[in-house]
Structures are given as structure tokens and as C-alpha cells.
Length: 237
Image 1 (cartoon, rainbow, N blue to C red):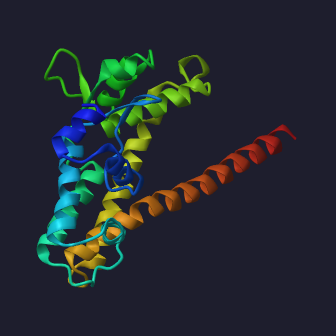
Image 2: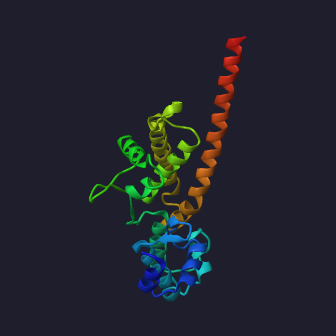
Image 3: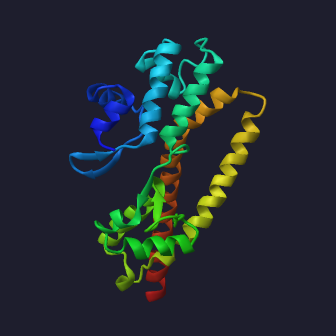
């Protein structure tokens, strides 16, 4: 749906909706073009949850944002407030999303999208939903396909020796790291903090941990490159 329909369904005007987007209280819409965005029922529900928090819990938008960021958890907010916050958090993280992107829409921008998507599905990296005239995929999976298209543009393709199958190890590495992260978090938090606090901690920490792990990976990658170059130089001499 477009912005006008979202206004009609929520009873909230576009200026307020844009404020909610800027504050990170709504998930980003699907950007079809520079000035064209597509919304869906998750946005309708997210707006409704924010309004319930404003009216029922008498929270301001800034207070809602602080609670979602893990601040003000001891403010005396009731259980109903946290129930709404958890729902809003799930929507923001895509855990409650119902939106599926047609693979054809991605293929319009990326000619290799269909082939790459099916390859990634065979590798267990993404899931294609085949319940209609064409395959569809979640926003997260669509983003994975689009990122690979950007990597292709840099020259990493079949012609240069970098087919998608070369990165199958990422799936196994991600599964292993995620399993260990979950185990460590659950063991450390069990009986020590509330579920609300745990959810808030995760919401704030996950983006930071991605950066943290990315930097460690970058250091390891550069070290391995340097070691390989040094070994090659030694063999040549």
C-alpha cells in the first residue's frame, strides 16, 4: 500500500508517520524508487501499537524510543506496556513481518537475482515461498540477494572465479556463531534479569555485536592475507 492508504487505515497523517519512521518506531518501507515507498500491514499494526502506548500508557514518542533502546526500564511501566513494546520490537526486527517480496521485483533491478536466489536456497541461506505465480522471499532474504548483486558489480562473479557457491561456508559460520551467542546469553541472563530487560539488552546490543564481530573478522582476514603474501614471497626467494 502507498502512504495515502496507510493514512486511511491508521487514521494518522503522513507527517506523523514520517516522524515515527525517523525515530525508528516503524520498520522501513520497501523503497521501490527514490520517491516511492511501499507499506504493508506491519506498518498499520506498528502505528496502532505506538498509539496504544501513547494513549494507554501515556508515553511520549521519546519515552517509547528510550524504552525500546533499553533505557527507563525501571520507570514503573505496567505489564501491558511491555507487551506492546515487545510487539513493536518484534515488528522492528522483522520477527512479526508478513511482507514477502516477489522475486521478479528484484530481478527487474538485478538480472541474476533469480539464479542467485535459487542457488542460495539450495545452500540453505534463504527460503523461497512458492505459493503463488512466482517465488517470494522475506525482506531479509531479499536483502541478502541484493547484497550479493552489489558484490557481483565489484567483479566477484563466475568469470573471475567467485560463484555464489564459494560462500557456502558463511552459512555454517553464521549458524555456529549464532548458536554460541544464544547459549552464552541465555546462560548469563537466566534468573538474573527480567524478560523485558533481556529483550531491551538484545535490541541495543545486536547491532553493536555485528560491528564488533565484523571488526574481529576484518583483523583476521587481513592477518591471513599478509601471512599468505609473506609465505609466497619466502617461497619465491
